[in-house]
Figure: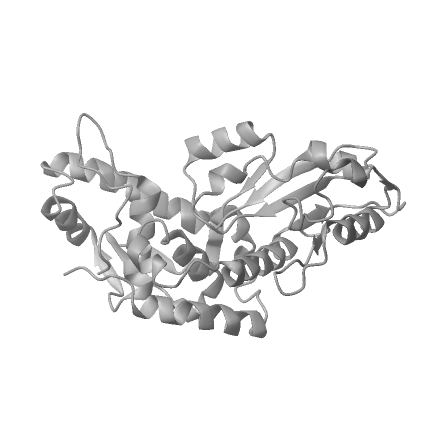
Length: 311
């Protein structure tokens, strides 16, 4: 098994203190990234007791009932693409992580904050993981949002076009009028102003005023700090929108319902967490390209090999 996460797991005190999503992610990691292909309910309960997260069997059982409901929810959201099965009071690995690269990649990204020493061993340049997550986001949205157009701004440190070029590309794509980019004091050095992907649903009349989202892709642990990006007030200065677009945030984390609700309210936009992002797998299991799959696996492999194991 993997070592228990460094954050999110706390002993029971007058209520459940352990983060349900973090614990379920840990179980998924044990099944996908180690030799354990199955874990029984009793095995998991033993871990809770041995690690002193629970002192009583009945309270541990209450928490595990929530765990089982969360796995059912994830399975319902992802369908055949979900690599874990709940069956006869046990969790089963349905496919190796290489056969579920998009889900496994997002899961592994979520481990960075939970295993900090492990994560620091790979340095502080997150450019590649950010680009891979942006590509997965685009491919996933194309799979799920039938009839919508998905446009990536295509920025990377190696081919930074600059904000002026990105604004003009987006403005041309949308058919909107130019704004006043020079009003933004940093426009000459800004990279993307928080915009990674444009998601739109045009009509056949080719006129403006259609559903439109400006999407930020946040692959790192501090995603809450990006809930206000892209800033619609900034972008309505850059482009003279007839209708102000909504914003959206794509993240690789599985967010519980209460936090999901608050995030949507806080950002006044659409939160696209791991379950929502990858839900297109219900219709088609293998929806990412062979090249993308190879690059994702190559990024993941050295990290999986040194994941911290339970002693």
